[in-house]
Length: 340
Image (cartoon, rainbow, N blue to C red; front, side):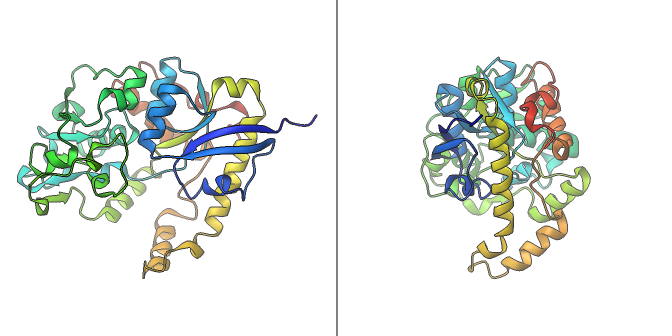
């Protein structure tokens, strides 16, 4: 039996492991036409959670767990296009007196979206690696309800958390530089592209002394290496989901999509050394260092190679009051993709 030649829509970021699928170098068997939208993750998740416009979508892992707990109709495949040490992106205002993570107890920490995966992992690592309880700090959230992941999933601040919203005329960046926050991730504030969700890109810090804003982890490579040696993985923040109605109508699609994403990832890895920008003078040496620390594949796909990381994500989500029960790791993914 021949498979249908589908026309599907897909919204995702421009990840190097996904691009071969978008530019046509890798095909999904049975899919004739993949209409894709390249989008900032904050916009991607807001659009898909709120409107369900796309048959395939990149998705925040934290919001995926919450969406499933609310009965939203989607299923993932175990492909994780983005990974990073999210907790290491916190910056501090030196006037806060914070010298190390333990000093954050009793302080004001800003987050873009309280339920986003980077916030989930920042809270979890601060608590479990550095002893800073989520209940011992004050959380300030930047995104407004109508543009946040939480607006679509009915987010309510968890019980016992000290929670505030950043006023419309301020941002993570402006509040950190003016020491209205003690710590916040403000790397996005320096990105030139505009987007509709993150206010930091639109509201430049008025006044304020940027020389007072420093990274909480001055040596991110050292902190990332510490975390990887302690836990054995780089946390992923996103997965790929299929809308539930599409998965039920085309039960063969998930396996074919996953196979294509594995092929695209392999192609990206094989061409990595050729794609290092010449401007990165020590690019080849940095690639060698990356492989020395993390091995040949810091971005594994599949359920088994990611079981510990996925279980930790589930545990953090439940522990932080975002999901009422812990799901089984297997249940998050289409059955045909669990053993590949």
